[in-house]
Length: 286
Image (cartoon, rainbow, N blue to C red; front, side):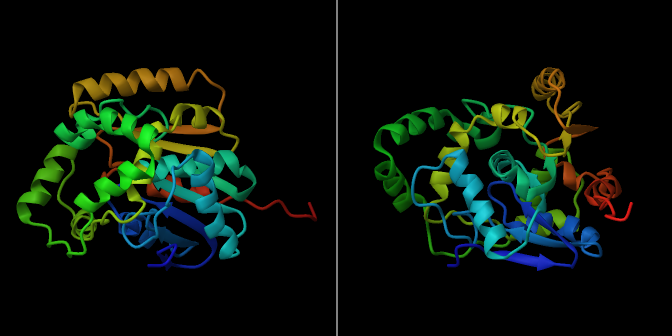
């Protein structure tokens, strides 16, 4: 396994795409296919998910930032744009906070405006009830508890192709219509590998609201309002956005009707994203 696994599409100013937990860089392919005429898009697998090597110790925001920055420096990309969703968006926020000089523009896909819930039932189902307990054990025992869990959940077996029932269930839960790009991403899930749990526990303890309030980078936040999909989440989202917008931050906000996977919404404003990323260079002759 390489430290980083990335598929690169297109040419031009580099754009790094960081996916949600449970997905590989494939999640961003439909965005890359549209942007690749103007940008060189790097579809990364997250550390410990898919084909990127995991982080072997407790994860802090600084280490997440270093993980992205090492990729940028190693590949001599210079200042980059970053597009990131969910868990990937938290990593992108850490990178933009600690290395603002290395980020031209940041596009957050439904991330940053809400704190991750302490009991993540919507995200993890009934397993979410155990997360606070496991988190406490992690703080107490560190890698010892990680190694014990990894022996139970990590497998070398390949994944089975996604079924029609699974696709329909995912679309029903997320309020999406069935599309080829969704099927492709679901058919290539990110397998949990060594170090992946360190990323998950690190994310659970990450102060995402504090990171976004520290932003210096010009940012586009595209978020789902959950209206008509999840009443409780819609109320939480509205309250969180009202609180965030009270701060003077370099953020442009775009609200979308629907849920968490905003980039798979047929109304996703891809041309507005392209325009946002096309930073005009000031001529030295002007």
